[in-house]
Image (cartoon, rainbow, N blue to C red; front, side, top):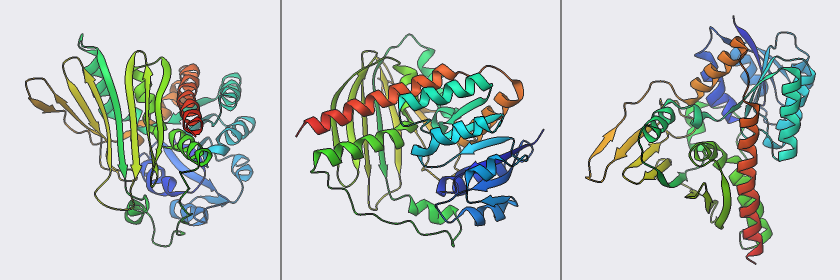
Length: 344
């Protein structure tokens, strides 16, 4: 069966990630409708895939050709759009991360989906990446406890990759002035948004290994845009470090897990580039290093395939797992922001 997909949102992630992925899964999904009121790209993207365009999500949700909905709108609108899709009787929803920007909203949308029997997936593509399954198998296959976790990002402007993978006539992104991080309230707000909008890619991976959040130890907003946050979960120290650079080398996106014997590095490809799976390397105390072979498919292909399986099989949705991801991430973000603001 081929499912008609309605996409709410038309940002670079839709153009560069979801539409190319769905084109590779044409036997299962066909984009039939795109709704977007803000980016100016919606009509062009709809024409590219031969679908309808609407400036309002409500028109998309009224379209009987839309079987499943991909919610790629700004994070603040995710809960509203999920609730509207459920009310419209859509059978399944894939929502970009984060599921919601508050625990209360997350509980509302999960309750609505559970009560209506709507399949719900959150697009945590790093979690779905085949490389993470290999890394997790390596870590759980030995009696070798995890002793530390770090997530390190150094990101050039996204536009560097958008230019490669999107149309030349896409509307140029605005460049707002940099926030004044010397003001504690501003720094706290920026930190919170970055943790819930960027760190959210890898927090489910951290929770997979250290499921019980305990406390934030330090938190700081970094210039020009970034953060350094340390916390403890399940007795394991975790460090999140990110800086968004104005230029320079290729993106670095790495999760490092140290055990009592090994160090395992999972290096993800740059965002907006379909370059296969992440790379997994393992270093042992004797200095030997081994690498797992790369998989051809990436986390985007894997998450849409998992979504299709969920829709087709009717198997139970792990609603509580989705909620626990939100609670975990927001606990870190809320406490880190409080620490930054209190430091004044």
